Image 1 (tube, rainbow, N blue to C red):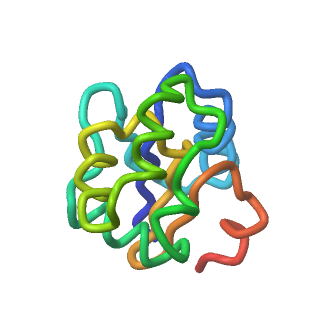
Image 2 (image 1 turned 60 degrees about the vertical axis):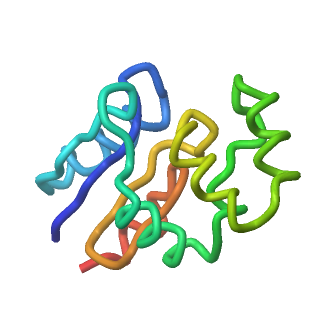
Length: 113
């Protein structure tokens, strides 16, 4: 497994995801979203794995103005705006090759080989 966890140190769900993999002795790479966000390629991979960009948006994001803008912007500009404002994404984002989840999803991670 090649696990990457994208999140923030303050996110409780990110810490729970780290604990999930640590408890199972699975190595992972932590990427702090405050320092470095998803690249365009990583974003597209996650988007495909979770069934579209709308499944990645955090309805409870602190930045409700940006979230509202992204929801009403034309489709071709939406992804660029999200890449500029990654704080509106659900965390953690956990990647394992082509597979990915958004949010705390231990039931999915258990299925990964």
